[in-house]
Image (tube, rainbow, N blue to C red; front, top):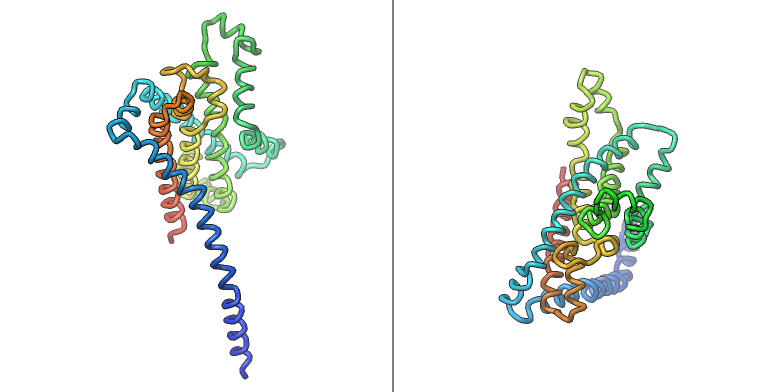
Length: 282
């Protein structure tokens, strides 16, 4: 018998023997996703709509809910552009230059990934609280950071600032700097080279990083909870407002607010898949 035929038969035998294991693993994965993803999604929307669409819309349109929505959008609207600018600048610096302290800079940028958000919030309280290092000076000049909007924005910035960098940096490092050097040698300015050469090469990484940064900014709970003070209608973001409603046994209202964050997560996932598809397209 020809050796090629023997190899083909051996491969078919291996595949047929592995089929039960493959289907078992697929079944376990689907069960896991169903229990930890589909069931919670169904629970959120069923609780949110258990008193009808009218009660659902009324819970979202309450003044405190609208204030939480506005504050969430404000914090994300400030944090995301600043993180975009920082992420692009830091990725360019780290990918294109070699300097002393480069690894230390990368470690510091990754700090929010390793520090608990609650600890991050406590750090800001120790810095800017009334009894903190800068507290007396802030009180003297009537500047409010902790238990106010600036503290929420600072906490959101700290938690989210590695996302854009971590998505853009690997792409810049993989693509190298040959095209940028060619553009510079032909007389293009540094800014023109960055806009017309570098950005088009990393645009999908930028969009992906901005998407993740925005999702984390809107859904952040721990650090924002510490610095917000839970002032209803003033310093509560959507996650904090949902927690307050839940603690008051207003399940319909709590899950109505939580459903907004759930929709955000689903939209983020859909956009993420689209970006990945476009990035892989020829």
